[in-house]
Amino acid sequence: MNNGRRIRRRWRSSARRPDWRSLLVALVFAGFGMVAPVNAGRLPRYGGDLRFRLAAVPLSMDPLRMHGDDGALVASCVYEGLTRWDSADLGPALARQWVRDEDAKRWLFYLRNDAVFHDGTRCDANAVRQSLERLADPRQSPYAWVLADLVGWDDFAAGRTATIEGLDVLEGDQIELRFTNAASDLPARLALPCASITRRRGEDWLGTGPFQVLALAPGVLRLSAFRDHSGGRPYVDHVEFVAKREIEPPLADAVVEVNRVLVADGLPAGATRWRTTAERLGLAIVNPQSSTVNADGFRDKLAASFDRAVFVRAVLGGDGRGTEGISPAGLKTVTARTGESTADLAARPQQKARVIVAASEPVLRALGERMQVHLFALGLAADLDVLSVDAFEQALVVRSFDIAIVGWTPPQPAVMEFDPSTRAQLLASSVLSPLLRDTAPEAWAPARIRAAKDPEQALLRGDWCVPLVFFHDLWQTTADVANFQPGAVAPALGVASAYFAPRTP
Image (cartoon, rainbow, N blue to C red; front, side):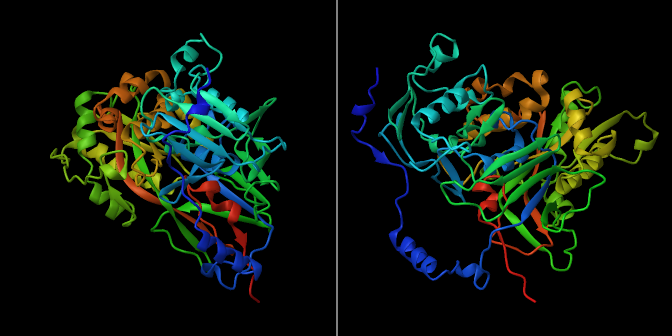
């Protein structure tokens, strides 16, 4: 039975109220056709295309199948959730406001009334409910744990009911979520890319984001500006995500290309760089089927052999921090190095390990080179294969590697509501389990992580996943672009508000 109308007792607001003084200042600037002081003298204008070169372009636009950082980058352009990351804080997205009871078991979300899907249909509470039910369905979703504490979820997951009792549509613009346990980090969970609100039309997935899908082919995704976006039409006409190839076609004159680069790379004349606000974590993933690095003692030595300070100085040029955990909050620099002599390595019979990394990830390539050195110090020769995106993905599918170097951006650690269990489950379900599939350790199962006393360390137990170092992505372009901040957790990559500044003669 729907008890939603009785929930208005003892609500505590969890949404930020408008800052009317800031709004007034913004209106004054708008009235005079001015922009923010940071871009003084650079008036926005519509037009132009942006191209991003990524390690991998998603094969499907289903947000439940868009894994890792590259998937998050794409999803943030096309889709929106009820909430979103705003720098290091949570802000409203499709939900304009939300309130909760004192126990954090009942949450009421008030939806925007001007949000529409890319086919023009309204994004109302019923559409939100359908999307969240799909997210919570373990038969369809690898992220069902996000909403597994909803009232009635067990019966729904077992197929005994067609809907979830704890998801109630109260009005066309109001939806209530009721939980059996406290869900104090719910707004943070709903800001994850997998919690994007979508609508399916045939084989297509529709969102409410600032860009809509124009064309999808292997290795290439092209988006166009969505004129009816609730936040206004993006300044940029098109955004293209391209898997990096060894031989690239020439760019059209109107296309601005943005690439990831190393901090140590030289800055070409006229180039501009952006440092992302989100920190990425380089990870070494050990293949459980490997015949060369799967011994428990060897993996333990490998995990203990990394001097994170050396990584930061020698590999990243100072652009990072050492860590053993999976979030910056768990930061701990270690200096343990193997004491094993390397003088007689040449005389030993050598097995060779295969370390793979995507060619389009410059920082991860540097980490792969360092991994090669550490394996040699432990008495194991290694080939570092820097692969094209297609070859890298194929190697992951057939698991023809001993160690894979990948990157991951943890959820914002400054938001205390986002607990370690949620972070650990997100890494396991979005990166580790899709990569290793049926060979993934049982300890990575969501139920195991959720029950662990220290979920982040439980995820690292066994040294199948070795965190290397935190670093910032650097993006670079030689074009004249203003007001642009790419990043995995920034809303819409900042692309919607990016514009090409007028060129000075």
